Length: 222
Ligand code: B12
Image 1 (tube, helix red, strand yellow):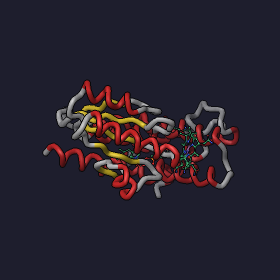
Image 2 (cartoon, rainbow, N blue to C red; image 1 turned 120 degrees about the vertical axis):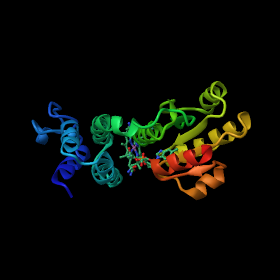
Image 3 (cartoon, rainbow, N blue to C red; image 1 turned 45 degrees about the vertical axis):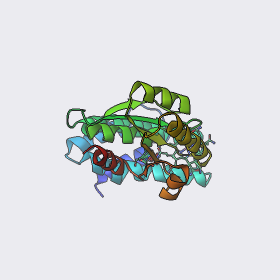
């Protein structure tokens, strides 16, 4: 792997946001995710390579260490911050694209769930695919989705959940959306989900990654 991508992965794994960040103390004065991402882009490395070869595997390592009780919530939060600093540089590449005319995509992380890194990535990529995005943020309940749908008839909806506990909330939200706004297509995603779960809760599409979502959405309107 490119040594720069390796270094960036380490910065995200250990929560080094930028050069000025005092955390972690043993990486004092070293470049963080902010500088390293910029450097990687300047050196011609593709944004998708930065994401899939460096950032996403780093977050996977963070999750593994958390499961094994080797790190705790504050460390996980610093890693998320570092990932956010990296994503700020990638955003313009993923968001650029055609004029936004294909349709409207309402996205949110379901109620009870505060994880937004994956949801933000999906929003960026779908926007880059030519869609108007309404990002409702995290901890979003069925009423917020339905109200936004009422204001944007015909919009598609994306739900994200990262916790096994909030997957249950996803089921309620899908049911309510289908009841109040029949015909709405609902896409679901998040690390603990799979297509069996999607079928069980009556959602229309599941994808483990943003690309699948973009392809599905585009296929619905072409
Ligand atoms: C970072 C992180 C946090 C950060 C979140 C910061 C933020 N701004 O998002 C903080 C520290 C806040 C956090 C808190 C908690 N977390 Co946490 N967290 C993680 C971690 C390490 C990474 C998640 C992540 O960002 N991954 C990277 C992104 C890019 O991947 P992704 O989200 O899966 O998204 C991709 C796909 O799933 C898909 N996708 C996602 N959404 C959607 C939607 C649609 C429509 C589509 C099509 C696709 C799609 O596309 C994305 C890009 O490829 C995971 C471990 C892991 N490996 O998942 C644990 C993890 C999810 N957390 C966990 C836990 C337990 C918690 C806490 C309960 C901890 C605690 N004791 O407080 C709290 C819960 C807070 C809450 N109410 O939500 C557990 C969940 C276990 C479970 N089975 O339920 C995990 C799995 C860690 C572990 N191994 O135990 N966490």
